[in-house]
Length: 269
Image (cartoon, rainbow, N blue to C red):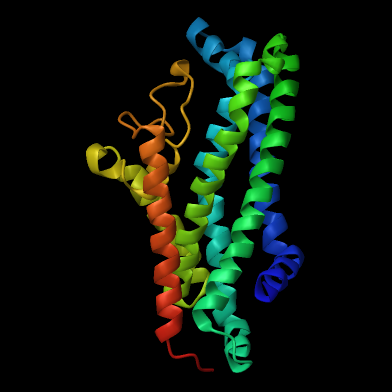
């Protein structure tokens, strides 16, 4: 636990932690408030209904989380890659190994700290997103009676836990990619490329891509029927429980790759 506590202190001081969180919350706030302010100005009735739906509770609870799972996965990849890559480029891993730390243990405990920060960021971003959705509803003139919908509120802990695993999985992939590359920039670039390549491949290989990490992450919660088919707009998503299992397997696989590579890699410089 000493490595874990040290990792928490280190991540708290890292600028990338605050920048990643700030960008996610900023985009979320911008979209929800802009939607609320312009919803009734949409040229068609269908467009107005779709815009108002995003800031209408209780459905807005799920829409906020769905947005975080989609865009948050990209930010988590970048965050995980930035932290893992810095362990190599800054010589932190080398110093830890020189002190006699187990390579794989250090790698896994460091990611455990990353995963905790991802979870904290997810919860805080969600709370702020709901606040922005309320503001958007006010601007759009939509009643917020659904805020205290007991059925929706009772499901939130489970949905947030599922979202945490999904976003942490994305962070683990970025972490593993940067570990293999031994570089922050290479890890971030490859992670972003993987994210967009998977999104593009959904058009051509829907039955296969639904088992890929980011698509599965978008399906871990059941989205409202009026939001489309679910799975982050994917037409043929996995069922939520199956998507959760797929995400768990990707998470474990990413961490195993990172740990095994670190254990066998030559650390020099």
